[in-house]
Length: 403
Image (cartoon, rainbow, N blue to C red; front, side, top):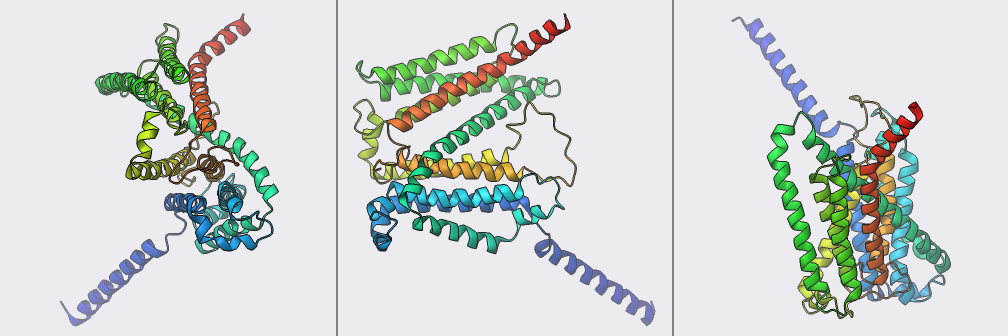
């Protein structure tokens, strides 16, 4: 090999190295908008906001005593208690609602709104902080009005979450019953169905032990017994010869309504003699703190999972197949869920009552919270049964129209 050939090969090697380093740098720093990573950042912001609302509620009287000087606040008792939670919630709601309005309808990755959703973090963090501070200068009358609106917004969040859960259960059931996976999923589906029913029945038995220890606990006995009855009704409808919905989806749905019933009973006031688990929690501070931390994380994860599931409300709508340059999830729907989720966590922190004083390290406690959970359970059952029978109704209508 001559010197010229060696120089040429060395130059080409250096060129390939430089190109490699340039591509590596671009891969790390010049990849452009990253929607998949952006959703985790928004989830972290939502978690920080939730913890800030809890801090203002439980420890704000000492840390933010200077708010007494604000004329719009009726003293720290109102600004930093339930009303303080509503103020933080209002700022979080405004932030995500602005993001909803500015990203709704984004379909393609080359859309400038994709860059706004996935980048510009410095500007959005500043906007987020400003919107969390400004509500503390808003008159109390307006915050109380927002608290009433938040009841509706939290209800919308629960409805979307319900549709998301049913959508996932239905998808899993259809996937296991499809021809492609029927043979492979038959045993797994049977095991999962049996486990779901056994788990539901075990949960009902434990609720009788924990929350209905005496015959005088009539309301709790009614809630638990009705849950057992609803589980049987869903099963009978699902295995009907005309429905043939199978046992997997119904078993998973049964576990969900048992969970909602347990959440309702757990939300009953601590002073209730039938709520022995709540009494036990008051005697073990570490258990109360652990339950609180888990509850906050569940709120954030539920909001995150529901926000990403933009297809849960489009089950009856024909959608076009996604192309490679389509956004990975609906940005507008994602931010809308987080905006109503801001109202939802506020309702949990104040027990769905803006005039109620919540104890430290408590969340979603009170009769209002219990009834919200129970109504949500009943609604979940009705929606699921409706989804089972609605194909039969459509078929009968089509037959009537054809004749």
